[in-house]
Image 1 (cartoon, rainbow over the protein chains, first blue to last red):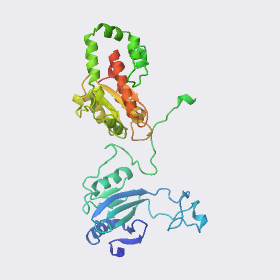
Image 2 (image 1 turned 180 degrees about the horizontal axis):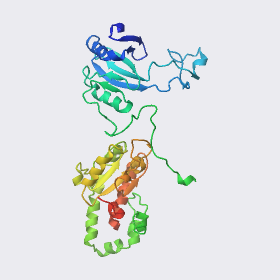
Image 3 (image 1 turned 120 degrees about the vertical axis):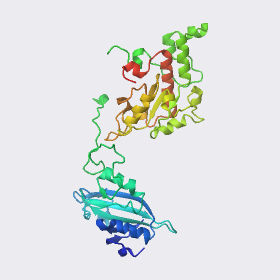
Image 4 (image 1 turned 90 degrees about the vertical axis):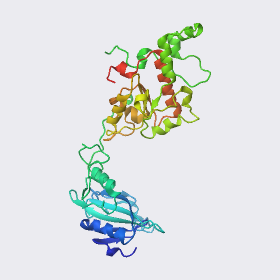
Length: 182
Length: 195
């Protein structure tokens, strides 16, 4: 799987511990997925996930930071301290996790970046299973997929307003009073 | 409305029944004082007989929603056998069920179907809110979970814990049986709400 630059719209790729991550231009993600399915043999789309990076790089990150290869004891200042992470290109990353059903079961992640309000080409024509995956991301994150046959809410009630899994959406609930301690 | 009995304690029922094989009559029966006399004399009234029959075959409806459903399934298993009480026949159709055991968290999207199922049940019907999520929303105090199923249906018995042990659910069921035997009307009648 070293010929990633042949994918349409290829921007960059990065090898990870589980699967390589290939960054694709948002407008050409459908062609890249068709190429991955037809030429490279990734005939199963496991999941379509959107990640919200609102506020990333703002106040710093605590916890496991480390180096690209993992926590390195030879570099003590990189472990668990507040450090500014590298900024992300846009607010949302859409990741398409692919699996090839052959010996070795290679996996890959195609990734494209969008901002709030930008539309993404739908890959339902490539893998029909992405129908509900994209509906879930529309429902919870507000990502609009162009060319989707039935882009309505999936998990929340049909008349819900807002997209609950965004970083700026409140957790909700009601105030609870514990009367036995007062 | 305030002086009308709505809660079980308003009827003076405070029994702590345990599943002892050698347990004598419950506090309900002691308070009423009628069971011993009737048992000794062999007298029963028609209403007591009907209530006894309803208690001994109160068929639940299959309303397992989440994790509490696992514990509800395990009371049908051989260890905590609810067939002893004639309740192993879980009916899938609410038209044929007497008891609605709401086991699991109820999302706002699930609330209208829950109310519809409750409406389709025939009187007399009882509701057990099993677990913390059905009683009060449980640990989920957020935008999705209905904070307590008693906001939409009248509840007779609340069984706490997360999830309640099968014995705890069976104790709730048995307390419901005792309350019905003692003459306590179902919750929709006590609270005066629509069925």
